[in-house]
Length: 266
Ligand SMILES: NC(=O)c1ccc[n+]([C@@H]2O[C@H](COP(=O)([O-])OP(=O)(O)OC[C@H]3O[C@@H](n4cnc5c(N)ncnc54)[C@H](O)[C@@H]3O)[C@@H](O)[C@H]2O)c1
Image (tube, rainbow, N blue to C red):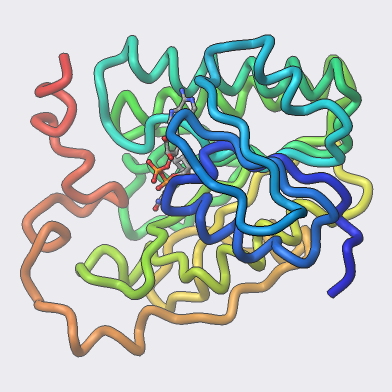
């Protein structure tokens, strides 16, 4: 691996996915700018830490100075009151895209979510071209995240990849994960492809492992340059037959699609 990625900014670098991406891009990026509202310590001379809230547009623009790419992971990662989602996910993403436009950043990778289509039945194979059917307000915020990406690509010529992340876990722990698991290895594969695929104006891909029971398309990811290798099925015998997944409807969002899951935030 060389240092061909240049300067990469990771927002939400202290989070679950961000920590893995940080380690995965080490050695490939000349400089890693790690952004989070919680404190982080640089672990190598190539790392630079910036602590601020993504709502601070000026701070975002300063952090993106000289960046070749941004992996935007910072935000609210689950159901929450709408004002929090608008602030953290919609405003935060707008600040990142607008800063990327001003700073001439070559590629923006946006963390989207499978929950944007959680109301499709498990019997359906969902592709990125199908209309959103969010399973909650969080999913709605990710519809806006993707729409902002599309706007900045169409209107201002930014190169944007939306990655609809599945269930990022070291290993599946519940029934639903047998379909939705995204292994750390496959996550890094998708992020790497999203950063390096040539000639992209705008694309959306599902970031899901090659799970036998998956209900999301992986063709778009292959077109981007990454075909996942892990399969949750090898963990199937270790997962209890009952649980969130079995208790809920036959919707892809599982328990996330239950009315109560959203009502407690309204
Ligand atoms: N983990 C998953 O399985 C999964 C699935 C689908 C989508 N995603 C998306 O991937 C991204 C990362 O998810 P995660 O699981 O690592 O979440 P996480 O909560 O572990 O990490 C998010 C990070 O963003 C930071 N952050 C949040 N709001 C911020 C703000 N306003 N300003 C600055 N920093 C802020 C937090 O401090 C945290 O370190 C999110 O956008 C999430 O919606 C994750």
